[in-house]
Structure formats: structure tokens, C-alpha cells
Length: 259
Image (cartoon, rainbow, N blue to C red; front, side, top):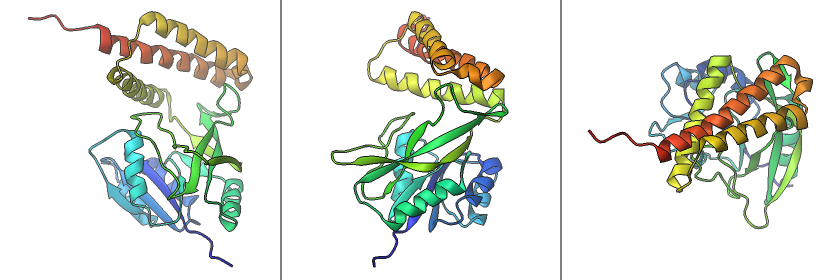
């Protein structure tokens, strides 16, 4: 009987000392933990190393996709499990992962359902659940693309996807300020990426997409069933959608006057 393949949990982080210990406590069963930091100043390194993680630094930020590629280069194990510092692996998800490793396949990427805690409530509607993300695969099979933001695992010809049982808990925002700062960062990266590809933006696009976002989340995806948190999340998501297109418009249609 062949030996069980080894598994590395891999994280890219910056200033996650507050979250990291609780996250890594749910990963104490893996064979290796790899943490790639992009310039923390809050004790993230000490927390990671205290949990037995292999800690590396790349503070020349290349974007989310490329940073994940660099982190995967440090992995010594056979399989990769991607986790963010604000996520927690549940016992049910752990059991699913261990079942996969007991009978591994070489051509499959595994999708995980994320359950997000937002402003005091787990969000089960709004289109946010099950929010399946590809997080588990053999190291030699694939990896992330080069996207600056909203990076994805590349699925080449012949690669299958399978859903795992169990949730990955996602404690996504500490408060409203954290949401707004994080959202602004994503919007800036999204608009920069689009501008580099020659795309144009307009405020009309932003308004239409923002309204569409709210209607989809709150009405079609039953966000109203998530109570006040659902309403707030849908409104903020509509705002964030508008901001993306507004920022693209600013980048591609406005210039400073010549002195």
C-alpha cells in the first residue's frame, strides 16, 4: 500500500497577527505550513513561526496571483491546501480532505464551500454561500494565474473539479472601516488591471452595474433572508461595484491640465 501523500497548507499574508494563530490552530494536522509575507510590521512572523510554519518574505508586491505562485514554489509537500488568515478549517472539512489524501487522484482539483461571517452573522444567501473556491490539489498539477486581484486556479485540459464536504469559515471583515479599505484596494487593483488591457470605464456603467448588483444579491439571491446584515452587505456591494467602474473611468478618461 502506497504512503499517504504529504500536505502543505499555504498562506499569503500581511499584518495578520490578530488572525493567524486561530487560523493555524485549525491546521495543526497538516504536514507543512508555508507562509509568504508581503511586509508585515505587526508580529505576523513571530506568530507564524511559533506555530511551526516555514516563513518567507516577498515585500515587492507583484499582485495576488503571482504572490501565490511564489508561495507555492516554497512548498515541499505533495499536495497544496490554500487558506487565508481570516479563514478556519472546520472538522468536517478536515475529514473530507483526509479522505481525499487516503485515495488521491492526480487529475483533480477540489472545491471548498466558504461560509462568511459578516457584521455579526453568517451570510447564507446574497449569492455568498456556498461560495465554492478551488483550494486543494496536487502541487505538480496546477497553480494560480497571474491576475493582480481575483486570481484563479488554472484548469488545464483533463483537470476535473470535485466538491468537498464541510465548510471553510471566513471571518471576512472586522468592521465597516475594514470593509471599505479592503474594497477600495480591490477596486484599485481591478481598475488598474482593466486599464492595462485597454478597457474603458464610465459612470453610467458603474451606476447600471451597481444597481444590477444590488437587485441580484438582495432579490434574486434572497439577501433579504439575511436580515439587516444582508441588506447592508448588498448595499455595500453595490457601492463597491460602482467604485470599480468609477475608478476605471478616472484612470482612463481624466488627465491633469498642463501647467
